[in-house]
Length: 106
Image 1 (cartoon, one colour):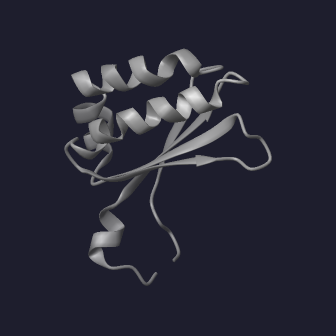
Image 2 (spheres, helix red, strand yellow):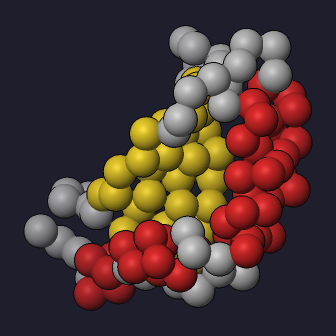
């Protein structure tokens, strides 16, 4: 592996989100409003929302965290997480599927 120490420390949250068909624009607007909530969270390095080309009501929210705990404890137990869910939760077709990854090969 040719990774720097900093690259090894990044944990990627990958949240697969299915949105109610026809609500994509409203969901994206909610995510745009929520970006500052993530960016001010402890350990958050970056946040991006990806839309699947072949299935436009499917998204992947990619958040870079310093540690899993920064996501699962510090953010998930915060008022900002509750605000995030308030902004986007009404547009979920089903609960998101979330996992965490780290770079194995670059």
